[in-house]
Length: 75
Image 1 (cartoon, rainbow, N blue to C red):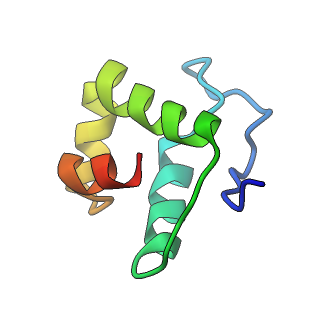
Image 2: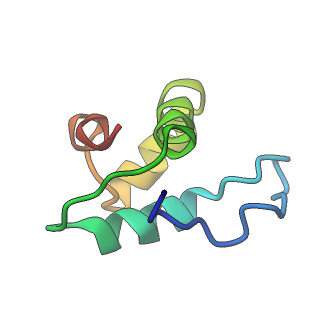
């Protein structure tokens, strides 16, 4: 069972993407220093954000989310 909860996962943003990069930042902040096992949907979605939305991913990185390598360790 997945312990990783996305707030507002069913709502859409202005870009039409229901996965909010701000929530990703909050969630990753909360996971720091803890062991995390997410479901395949969570891991896949983080991968998609990093690969297909490089501009948003870069903005998130600049805000201190994590480096690509740190996120890769989560997925």
